[in-house]
Image (cartoon, rainbow, N blue to C red; front, side, top):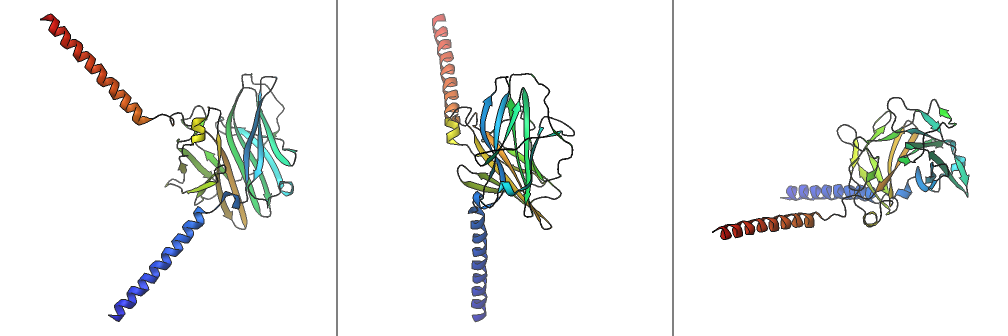
Length: 293
């Protein structure tokens, strides 16, 4: 009997310790604030219509922690490619400008371009890659511009966004988003951060090594116009030897085109209309038969 109680107490103690450990790790994952991570990300600024018919988009280089000083970062550079290109990509440098203590880029399009922008740099054994991808449309005609071709960009990790089946290149809430981490090795997880609402979530890879998630609907977007948007950050971290690689991608989300629709009311209205139509047809047929007699 004593031996039985001893094993019961030992088992209960082990279960309690295991539960506490699981709760600790779960709390650590849920309470991990986006601001606790030191990495770069790209933030959208103003979009300007130029007098020549082109459009210029301003993008700010932003950090989530005060420990990163962009002025002290080595090899800070920016470049882009056209996301519509197939086969081998051509990359072009983007000048990094500075005003009022902020670093930013200005990208321009005269017609239609799917900008895939990269900003890279390193500091104290950490390597940073910040990305974003967005369409930029103008009513002008493509023209030749002096562009600085980057022949051999650094072979750094990157996050790939699957836009197959998305002809408008527009991401919306409620839409499944598929990602892949491109590097020498796989990462165990990605973190999705909503900096506006100060929330984050962890997503794990599927059997094929890809990642997918569906952004929840946002009342602010649903009640706003089409030009309203929100930005979320996808983040991945990889350690190779003594080097740390921190990669982020800023995703620009529009409102869902169907989020404001009430499915239940729509179904009820449909069947109500059908019932009224059938009732009218039956009534008219009955009236016709009565008059015919």
